[in-house]
Length: 125
Image (cartoon, rainbow, N blue to C red; front, top):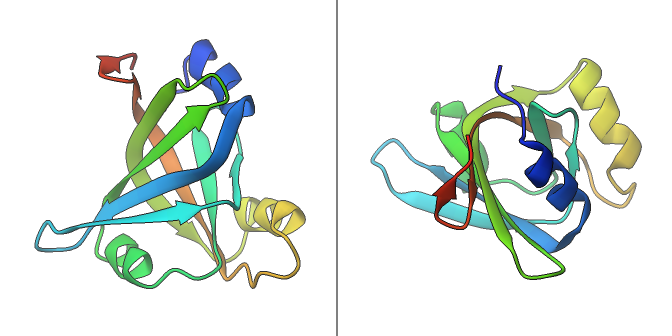
C-alpha cells in the first residue's frame, strides 16, 4: 500500500480550513463536498467522517475512487487520490468516533487509501 510522502504528511498537519472530497457517480459525473471532520488514520489512509453524505455515499457504494484536496496555511495545495473503503464498524470506525465531534452523527468512516499524491500539478507519488 502506498504511503504519503513525508512532505505531504507534514503539510497535512499544517492544513487550513476544510478539505474537499470528490467522487464520481456511475455516469462519470463529479461530486465535491467540503469536509471538516477528517483525520490521518495512518500514512496510508485518510478518513472522512460520514456525518451528512448523500450523493457522496451513493458514489462510494457505486465503487467510486476519491480525491482529497487540501491547502496549508502557507497556501500550498495538495491532492491525495485513491480508492475508498466504507467502515461502519472496526478499528477505523472506532477511531473516527473518538475524534468526530459528538454533535455530528458519525454514521461511518470513509477511508481513502493513498494511491497518488500531488503538490499542485507535480506528481509526488
